[in-house]
Length: 410
Image 1 (tube, helix red, strand yellow):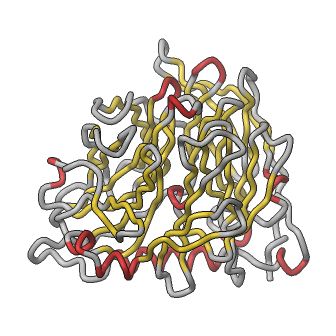
Image 2 (image 1 turned 120 degrees about the horizontal axis):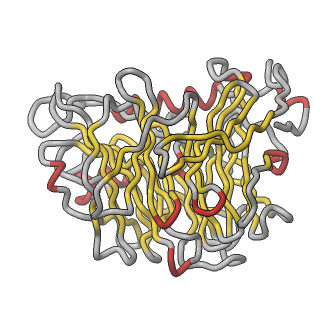
């Protein structure tokens, strides 16, 4: 963890908490069980994740005293392609990381958003296309929402030609979508929550927040938290306004949908990569919430995974790409165990793996196509590889992380 100035070090994660509460509280407004409304449950949006690029695998995890926002600092582990060990590249952020790190990748490019803390209202950005040997910087003058899907890079662009989009929110929690104008410090608003609410496409959703962005081919897809059970929560936005997109969800009859996250599925090569969206389905009171993944290479031929029933709308821990073009979901069960699910992609069934090690924050592709769990215990990050033959997790690396506790105290 590293900070820039003394003033910045005095800023902490309170703003992150306020923003998250305001966004998710907004998601719960008017969500009664009458008519076609949902039961009122509010989803927790995951932040921790990993992503695969041709040059290596990156992850974002929170470490430190996780129950104390002032002493929680996000780290940026990296494993170069072909290497067996991970390093921590968080120094590249050059700022306090209390608010969280948001990852997005396409082709050889990794884009990292640093969420603001406390009184700051902007999000610094850094980008690399050469394994972190050189970084470019940018700036969003608004705050990325606290969600893994709040930042996206166009999947069909090659390194050096990044087109990015983001979901941001002001102090009131009102969310909007912004896209860059050729560089990472010049952004324009392409749509906001108010305009979606007023659109014909938005009426079937009754959206209470924008929650994620991703690309299906060259099409920007925006996810929302819906309170009406008549939408899949997925939209495109352009000069002609908002339009619905994505597949019909047979599993969502009578359920409101929240788009929880987006992840690049594939090897990281542009031709092999497409965005997958994690959707949370909330039905009538007493019905268990469910998760499905949807994806399309071009915005037309959508595939839908089978559904996972989970313990609660606050149970999702992480979502991201797994080795071999697969996808993973981590969710807590009612007993508190962290349960990994893996699928070969939308349209396929989910496979439940043995419970991940305690403290697992996310999964990532390990050496030689293995699947590794990244487990946090204060200042120690433990990597455990899944042995398919033995059906268990075995420690592959232990990484102590130096954290300057108290550096963000006011």
